[in-house]
Length: 173
Ligand code: IMP
Ligand code: MG
Image (cartoon, rainbow, N blue to C red; front, side, top):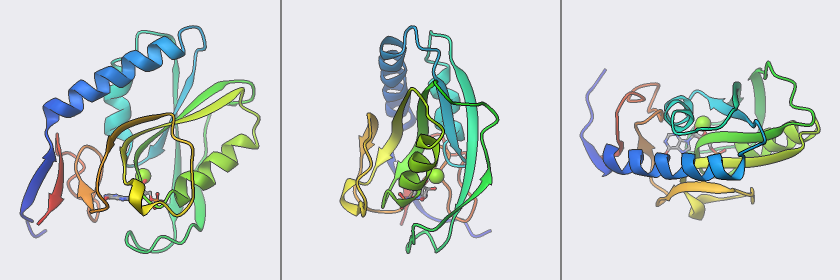
């Protein structure tokens, strides 16, 4: 695959600091709640892996995988469930873990889907927020970084399935 020229926009050191802060906050807010952290595959896997290692409270991890129809640049909001949770979240404190919120359409679908299962609470954490691109409002309890509407890669985020391994957030130039 062709190598692209990348411009680093969030260095690994800043990611690490932010993830530690978020982990501390969640550990405080959910001290006796034994929350279920639900990672949205695939993009959230790096963030989630680092986040749970900053938690010092009991918690469980699960994953959900969805496919959005339409390209990265033209989200439609039509979502198909590819892999469901394995944990029953009824009566549980659930935190959805997302890599990036763009239009909000994917997350809105997942949130509504999970709400039908009667969790005790349902909140969202996202590492990155492209607020200006939002088409539908989704309540975000924890946000790592607000960024401009440009396409970014690294730390779990891909371009054609590449670059998820980068230990920093970059854009392609
Ligand atoms: P939304 O439904 O428009 O909010 O899109 C959310 C999903 O699109 C994210 O979970 C990502 O998988 C993907 N996505 C949105 N923006 C970017 C980006 O800048 N880089 C990589 N993936 C992105
Ligand atoms: Mg995603």
